[in-house]
Image (cartoon, rainbow, N blue to C red):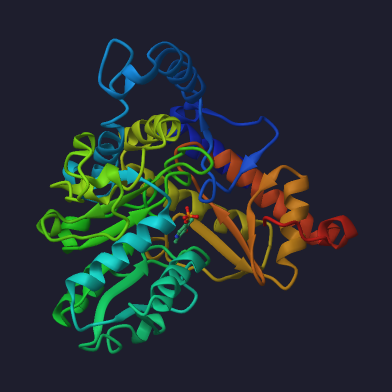
Amino acid sequence: MTPEQRAAEFDAADPLAHYRECFTLPADVIYLDGNSLGALPKATPDVMRRVVEREWGEGLIRSWNASEFGAGWFSAASRVGGKIAPLIGAAQNEVVACDSTSVNLFKLIAAALQMRPGRKVILSEPGNFPTDLYMIAGLERQGLAERRLAPRDRLVEALGDDVALLMLTHVHYKTGALHDMAALTRAAHAAGALVLWDLSHSTGAVPVDLNAVGADFAVGCGYKYLCGGPGAPAFAFVAERHHARLEQPLTGWFGHAAPFAFSDDYADAPGIERMLCGTSPVLGLAALEVGVDLIAGIGAERLYAKSQALSEFLLESLMAHDVALELVSPPVSNARGSQLSFRHPHAYAICQALIARGVIGDFRDPDVLRLGFAPAYLSFADIAAAARHIAEVLASGEWRNDEFNQRAAVT
Ligand SMILES: *Cc1c(COP(=O)(O)O)cnc(C)c1O
């Protein structure tokens, strides 16, 4: 059987196949970059139109409260956070949608340092997503933190009694490798440290159970698998047991216990709302809510099962075409997130040649071709076609064309 014939059988048996209809995707595109920017849900434009024309245009300032115009802008950050919660094993009151992942990292690293007086070290791994490491640098420059990096097989021994926080990304953005969240959380706690998990490449693709592993904090992205749109608000998780003690440094009025008391003095909101800073990005939250409703409605377990089947099928199809690319992701699907990464000295040009054929993946410096499998809207037929394009691009050497070798600003 050809990969295309196998794909037809898999698609016919795929319980998630009909969800593709919930997304707008160009007909001539095979989209293997939903791990970087999720596709547009078909419902989003109408929701945005309603929020803009009805809630903003007619409701004006009245729309901050629940009213005839809508559910209310003021509660949107907590409401959307509560809908993300089941995807990450959190309670509804432990998650809030706000700011960017970077800003949420800053708030939580600073809060963790304050909860572990006498300890200054933030432990992470080299090659973690850049913004995660850069946000430690900012606190280092303030004299508040000290960065320590240890390779993944040395993290546990690097957990000295000076470590305030272990901060890791659950699914590695470049390789897709998964950390053992339960074991690392346990080890950090045994060393007296707190743990922050970055779930940017997990949420909406890989099941996560923050409360089962006893995680302290987490952050994640709204525009990747959650399909919230470019620059969508991110989210922050704080375990309920820390709510009363947590002090984050960006003490803006939306994190205040009574923002509309207009008091001169700051007082933390009692729950997860103390993670907020300024006025919520209402339009961004409205778009994010559509994506979250859709993805959470499918459920993390079903999404991951399909993502594993898709990535296994790509490997199988590449083999059928005799493509020998060096796999840098774990070869076993339950040891990786929802992506496959391949190393090639000309990965950039290969990626560009694929994009010219409508197969959109991405390139990660210096030599990685990264293909993401957003399980909500990809079909097995997409994967079979992608494998054929990859085989043709490599066999023909068309990636050698000059046009595929000029670097753009965003890769
Ligand atoms: C995508 C991603 C981010 C993004 O942070 P922003 O503040 O939204 O730019 C952060 N961390 C990881 C691990 C990511 O993959």
